[in-house]
Image (cartoon, rainbow, N blue to C red; front, side, top):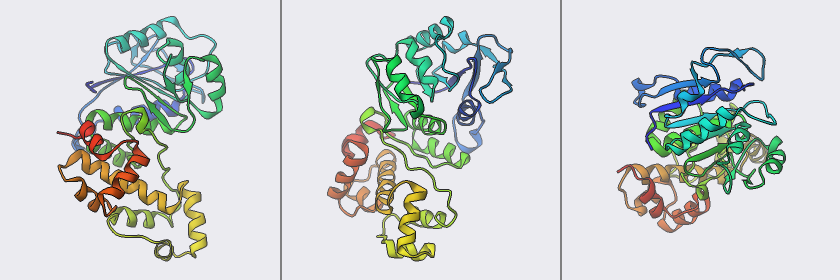
Length: 317
């Protein structure tokens, strides 16, 4: 699909954070950094009429819902869960999808998407707090709470709040390549957690740490993925005991040092597979796995497919 025109739908009430995520990814001009230009519009029931937000205040859309029909991407940010949604809103989403648009919901935006029927027979994710309610309301949709987003091709659902960042960056990566997604992520100061383009590739991205003492360690690992790292060495770098380091690492990243390093090496391998013609053996060496067989084992475990198949599907050329 093309990814040029993006329309974010505004319904009553609207969640400001999730809308802000969409605006941040698609609404800012980053052409000076090599990001292609986007035409970004916000669409409400009435253009120019303020819509209440869930956090107080109002948000004023620039366009009306109908203007979203011809967009390449239609985003449904979070909002209040309602028993019924406007028929016009649901019809616009269905028609945009019929014309070839990708539909992306964030958090409770999945409830709006579910009402269109477009999630019937598919797997979807929403905020964990509303997962059971969603499953009861839409029994023909399989609900997963194991991931931050799910890509069903023309339908993408993102879990609560900041998971919308992962879902949006994933879509950018899928359509425009990892280099563009990385540039946007760098400007947003978030990790470019770019999970694959099909459902079997979806995983839970590792959260960025907020611990200042861990940042030098993570940066050191990322800059030296092709070398071996031990917990004692990393603990010394962090100026902690091994026990404290291991406990703090898990608390701040949500995973163990070993798994974090494997994830980063797989991410490096994915970039090399996408952007270069290096043989798999060279990709393994540059990403720190040492051998092609070890790369294949970890790649299959993390991404859900082989390096060769991944290259066939996602290589830039």
